Amino acid sequence: KAIEDFISQKSLNLLRKLNIDISFLNISPDLWDRDDSYLKSQEIFQNLRVVNETAERGVKLMQDFNGLLTIHEEQKQFLLQCAEDRRKQYPDCKKATLKRKFD
Image (cartoon, one colour):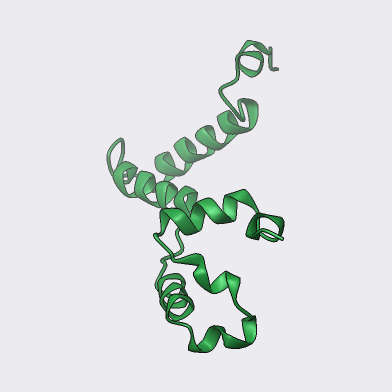
């Protein structure tokens, strides 16, 4: 059987994007810990940095926003509450969502 029978196309694409030599996939897993291509790929994956892009954007937005419109904490909290309410009313930018009427 071909390697594509055991691994998804997305996984193969990821390995290619990271320039990982997948030759170790053709040998027994018992031998991987002695295989240079496996050891190199293991090192690459262990050094990948996990990023929560959504959370980082939110933190950056708050850092930029903080003190921009007001220095008063009560007003800042009110503005944040308004933004949160708006997000609940318009959870996405789809045309159907934006055309909906809200109370």
